[in-house]
Length: 203
Image (tube, rainbow, N blue to C red; front, top):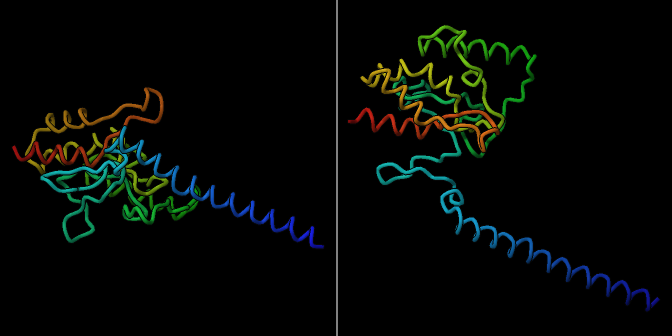
């Protein structure tokens, strides 16, 4: 009986020591090492890819945001608009609507959104791309397709008193290709594009 208790005690002590060692290694040493390496090699990315303008933080390259008329929920016509967000671009409430492709609620929502996007940009509904009417899985995607940016050029140019050629060139300059040449699709970061638009309109 005593021998059994002693063995149990030794096993419990060994397990406790292993727990303490793994806690220190995986909970302290490893996170500090990864953070240190990231800060040394990729400080901007490690800090959240924060974007600054006029000396202040205006957002992150990784998180989308609304570009509405101040004090309203209506999109501001002078800015390029992002894709819809189920969470209102709240990074603490990411996630899609979870509605299936055949759900009549989703079908109606997409149809209504397509009409609104087409009317807002003055284009036929047939020209409205999928990302203009559907949210991403995370609901905070900061990018739109070049096709969605292109149908917004005319409206953005008109409301900012710029030529369509100027704004189209801006979109072209801010279109990123596929990662590593083959991953994903070409995309445009809306925050970076709108900041460049602001600078161009201010000249």
